[in-house]
Length: 127
Image (cartoon, rainbow, N blue to C red; front, top):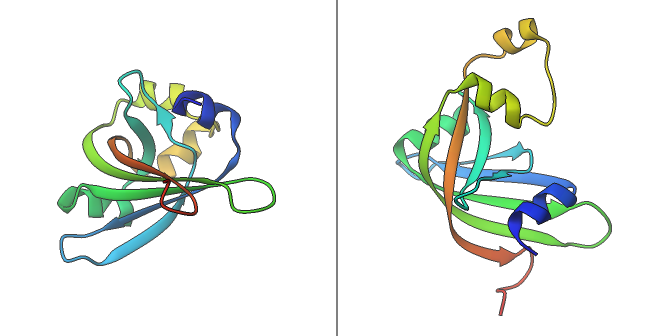
């Protein structure tokens, strides 16, 4: 199954792990990524710790635990390739809508693109 189909049809919980330049690790809950036409994954991010870490260390890991019983899902090893603040594009990609005044109070938002360096199943080495 290709990643576009997978993330459009599979519900679950995502965790993005990042580290700063000194190796201090952070993990945060994130929605399913958007799979772009060029194969990159894109996440909508606020200007918080995960985003700050990516400014000095572009490497990240994204774990996706599928909804349901058992431990099914995927792990992705990522490298940030770019980011933008195109509000129209971000709003078009959002799966949830917010009132304009609520969006303003939440702070800056970024669309961050990642190259997938490696994909593994949630459990095991994938061999």
